Length: 259
Image (tube, rainbow, N blue to C red; front, side, top):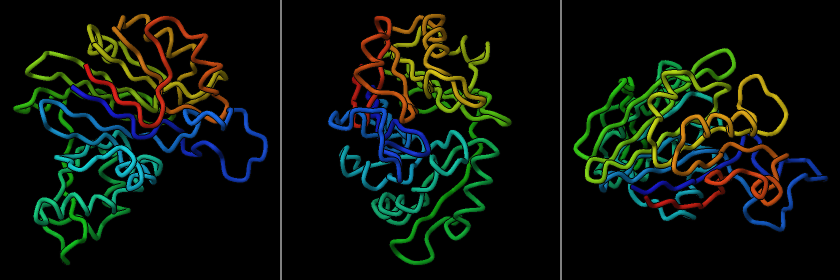
């Protein structure tokens, strides 16, 4: 299994527009963060998690040249507003609609923002076409399984995703944009090889985990390796990373993990 961190920043990204004094050392490229999304390759099947506003550039930078289907964790703009650029991948499939799995919130945002693309095939060659699908609790595929669970994110819920590759049995749990990991989500993540967690900043937030909270959850899960994502402009890579426990690291844009 391979995990590509295409983006690891918040809705503001880093650096932040209009901010002259930065808390991160911008001489370190690991502090330059585009909006959060990821790409999973499981037994040769390419699965896109979220589609950020920088999606086109993220694909170019990370050499993402094929997507079989997309899972949207939720409908916030920083996770969906690159959707139109999926047209390139539909074109590679001779205009076949891209399958888009999500929860109710994510699918409603898809229909509201990209109504022109909810089609079996594009009206005009080269345009996008999306087929919305409810994400089931367990999606069984030839390459393995993807389980989903709901996580609280402020006043609503987002999808947490657990991937298990058929050929290797390797397991990945991806929990972004949440302020709590439920008992069900903790159980699903047990025995995972790689755990990805929201870790916004040190200060408390009403819809995201803090670094300390994410650290405690990682230690409860007991993952072989944990990566934090969705970091704000107050999280300097070197400063924070050196103080994290063993087997826990900050992710960064462009990080590729093979396991």
